[in-house]
Length: 372
Image 1 (cartoon, rainbow, N blue to C red):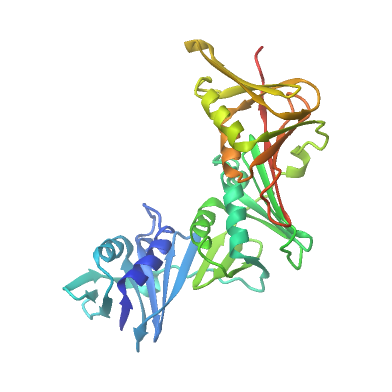
Image 2: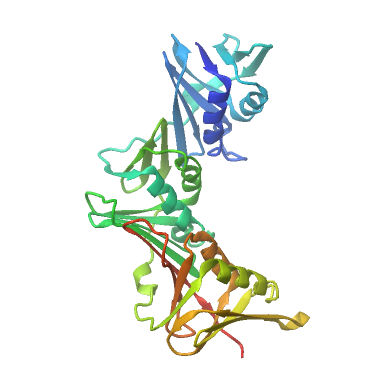
């Protein structure tokens, strides 16, 4: 078994796949890349049992076979090479030899048969989504997903497909983001919960792709295929909470404000807030928004006044500044709208401009109780 491949091309593909591999694996074989060679096509795979990703590379070869190569060692050596062709030869003494312009390097390999097989979906449902739409949907929602192991369904992003459009939702019970597209549709109704790790991997590579992503799914697994990549992952089992029920429908108090100006104020004032609650207070009356924070333990306090466009009753409401900052950072619009009903009901943040046709973003942030 022998093949020739460009060093930088191989490194680029392996770095993407390397993000699947855990730093500590229960099965030693998972510390390897699986190389499956079939003449001019080389399929390289990496897995952590939950997620398996593979890339198909075009190489120069006339042989077939499969071997598992130590991932860390291979990545380390590839990073040091300038661009050049490398020849990989599988020797009989259980080593794989890499020949470069300047030398030879031998790595021990394991048999490719030991590597866990990726799941194959029988008769899956499928949907086509443009790569940039999927990348945006992941970026806009993933930050709001929870990290609580006791509530695994909230630690992922909820995908809801229907002939009306696509909806992506993430929440950790303190904040919620719903991202919907009416310009991309699925042929049938389906929903599933995607774990964070494969989504972060996808987010990293989808941004550079302008192709369509084919998403295939059944009850327990999903497969994402685009360009020369294929990612198979196990879905999070369980029923997603009814997110529509927590979004308040009647919000008579509406605040319009410049996003960057609001974000800068919240950031500055938050420095003076209590280090455990991160609480800031918004006091809105007429065209004036007053943002304040106080840390009584250290006698630190700050207050800023901004002009805004506000319709509704005068009100005071408290928020966790970290959640507010995260959400404002995640929006790209110049102007935002904050809708509120009562100081103990969630506030709804929506961008006013900068959206594509058919794109809707709704962010919900739970208030914190003010101690007057």
